[in-house]
Image 1 (cartoon, rainbow, N blue to C red):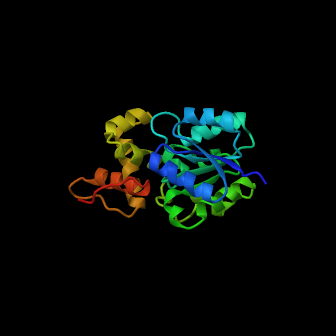
Image 2 (cartoon, rainbow, N blue to C red):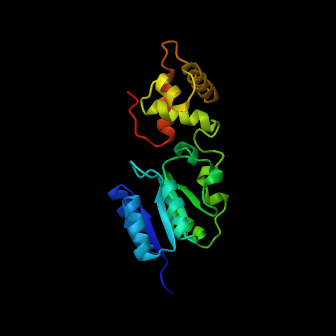
Length: 216
């Protein structure tokens, strides 16, 4: 039987190499790409059965955007998202907008032997279920927050002021502050008397998104 052809799209060279090696050892035929444009070119030449996509590909289209574009040309392509993000809301997407039958695997789970190959196999066979969708895990980080709260926390983590966030969202600084306070209340984190709620908010988001931070 011909080996199933897989395209791995990952912007980090070391991670890309490790993913390719893992899948090749699981008897997949693997090609790699670092960017969305590279992925489009490789797809045309390879005609893959499935794509393993990092969600955060740096500046430009996200993995979600790339999946949408690829499925227009290759509608039967199996999609497995591989990311640090707990769920798609962290990238401004709702779970309902992800491709039908796609898998969603958090990179933290790659330490489990065989999990990548097993999840990819299920997606390729059209047998993806909730167990292959970490973005639907009720125990995932920040599950108690709304999409709006996560969006505001992300902007805080990017260093935006309340005024800048308000302008970006078409609202007021007071409304932004209210969203932040509600988010921290949902996380059971009290507002510090020194007014460090923004620091706590940024740390909460960055930890959930798998961004390395210092506790100093």
